[in-house]
Amino acid sequence: MFTGIITDIGTVEALDQQGDLRARIGCGYDMDRVEIGASIACNGVCLTVIAKGRTPRDWFDVQISAESVAKTNIGDWAIGSKLNLERALKVGDELGGHIVSGHVDGVAEIVGLSDEGDSTRFTFRAPDALAKFIAPKGSVALNGTSLTVNEVSGTEFGVNIIPHTKAVTIWGAEKIGDRINLEIDTLARYVARLQEWNA
Image 1 (tube, rainbow, N blue to C red):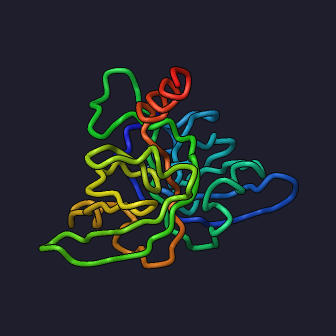
Image 2: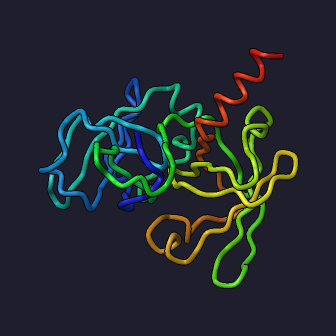
């Protein structure tokens, strides 16, 4: 489990497609304190550390199934791509965002950008099947970042991203047309399922 509060920006240093995709991600984490088998959310996708090292800087390797590549924006990764990173939630940690599973539901597209004061308003288009789970003032995880929905219109929804968030995540470099990992709020998923059951 994660909170959607990004704690590092990683860089894709290597990609190897032999069977499953294997990626090496350079990071600012002290990898001496990260165990093999630990979970790290990479742009919101929960991935397992299968190898690690500290030369020339701290890095970890992950193995990514074809299913994960198909359901996320991992297929867009290239050498040098920047990634939002978050280590798994530990008992006693502050829950500053919302409960995020790291199981991406689909990919949204950035369709609009506009400045609002010091913040930036991002407009996204969600897949049809996921749009019903997104509600004004509800939570979503976008590339692993816990964000509050401002408004919803059909399959499009908007969020405001403040300067601090842009500075400590990859949001400062995102642009119209970028594909973004979307995880809907777990509570919304269960409410929708209950409504289907009672219909």
